[in-house]
Image (cartoon, rainbow over all chains, first blue to last red; front, top):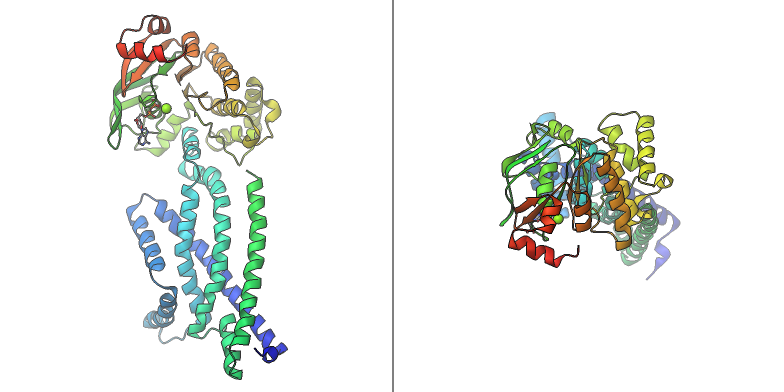
Length: 223
Length: 242
Ligand SMILES: Nc1ncnc2c1ncn2[C@@H]1O[C@H](COP(=O)(O)OP(=O)(O)O)[C@@H](O)[C@H]1O
Ligand SMILES: [Mg+2]
């Protein structure tokens, strides 16, 4: 394998693309947490309508391939918006980030829901017998304890998201994966840039895992 | 003060409380005994509103528990302290915070006042020096005493205990029962589910024996333990150490 084609310029190009991957993953994570919080609230709610909306959302986005969702978003979002706002062209980066965020929200819904429901039943009951309102019970007793259970899997979700951004190469977003194939096409040699890109993915995910374990230990300490 | 009329509660196929009627006056110490699975917890949890009976009414201080009105139910619950077998202290809060959170949040007390009450109650249960500890740093007996103090911070009119010493190592049972005896002497109305027959004999003003979801026998402790009438109670008493 000839790594001489990974010139400094090419390497910097890949690093910049990796930065975009992380940026999209961060955006999707934030969007996913917001959607996931709403989704979990819907799933826990006794309100039938909210509950159904949340359930359908989770099932649809967890039950279809993410590649399908990204392609759909790329084709459907502009079509829908142009019905109201006239012809538009969507930035594939923004479209992709929205698609991944929507997908992540479905997983995060389950993650937050199970974090909340996993808080010992005795905690809910103690709050009830002390006369807490539902809101006080959630804010003061349940969510602070659920938070500790939610953070570690949320970090895993972030790692998954970084890897998932590679799917956006299919709609022309020049993230890390796409940068590698672009370089590969230029030199008719795909393996060297793909190997380097894989290493960059690994460095990113291992670093996050490392800090996640530290954080987990800190959270566990306060128990 | 507390009145149950024909209360029924089932879980799936289990009829856990069968037509329970019960009256508790102010100042009474009612002990509920019976084999495991006889429905003691279910009855106590119906009184506290943790379980909603399918039929019958639970009345506290003349008002039926308002299961369809969360605000009112919340208010009614503040009149009843509940002590759990497994303490259920809030693990993410210090002992002092465990005691002050409800007075501050639910009763709207200023922090200083809530802390003052909390410290005096902690002193009463002998744990003032543990106010900054977290629950995980306490022994079982200490946790249960904190849990009792936490309930008392709400100035309840009645205290409900569900096997408060069953999860404790034997050497810690005494310290919790002592706190409960002191409460009884001060005139607190108490309903206590317990396997501590000695406590029931010594402290109760009345004892109820439950079996299979029904009140089988109800009497003064002297009569109930000294002269059990039903065969089921006789059998139960022959099996437990007194
Ligand atoms: N949440 C529940 N779900 C299903 N069955 C229950 C539940 N709580 C109690 N039961 C059943 O109801 C019966 C009475 O239980 P309980 O009131 O806890 O008895 P005790 O406190 O006297 O041991 C038992 O058969 C028990 O299995
Ligand atoms: Mg029980």
